[in-house]
Image (tube, rainbow, N blue to C red; front, side):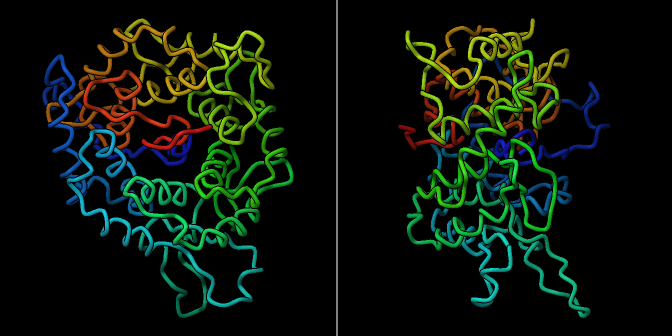
Length: 372
């Protein structure tokens, strides 16, 4: 997720050579309508074999699979894949302790991001794999939910018990037990994991809430860490996490006597100001419109109950300039598509209630689940 995890929780794939974005080579938008069948064909191709541009993203293989499987589900075409085979592949990436003594080693027993991150020790006993990761675990559970796998069949207690090893004294989360950056992306991943597993024993929600509070900026948006610039992905992670943890209501704008633990009016103003003159959404002030923020900002507005306040027609027009004739979406208009921006293009059109697309549970970034 680039700015979150998913969401939210994974890094955008820089999968095309910049030289390929010239006017001569860049495919223009194929039509003035959402080309569903072409998008399905694009994802089917990605399901069968990823182009070589994604070689550098091997460590994020599970995240790329999440974009493909959940994307096909949004497009109403999940029947194009072998769901049992997908579930079996995902389950093969779960981390498990070698023996009972390892249960107290401080490790996180979630899911690995790829096969290479499961490599064993080298001849000198040095671990060269990257262990299991919060973002990969969020993607794994999301895929399993999407293909209909019963999560009660996995060792969910192991995940819940070990996820507490990643929470820091300030309430934030490391993504991996050996150390890394801490920011709102990983609070979101932890909250989404605990929600899907229906087990909050591994997360101190009060501490996480306090960390999120510290990330709201003077202008109403949320930075990735306290004191940082407001960012569309960070804002989604903050608001969706608070919703998943039960700290804010759904559609708070419609409740006349609603009170909130965050500054909702200022947040709403910041979100609405992110829709630019071209109809798209920018992730930060003075940045160009970018396909993915139609979801990151649009999802926040959907949670708050402010979706009707945006110019949906203008947003749709912008997104169609990013639709490739090959299927998929690009980051900016009239460029080649990539898997990350394609997925968030589909989620954006789902939020716009495009006919034929399945509705999202925006807090989780997948279809089907209802957040009470």
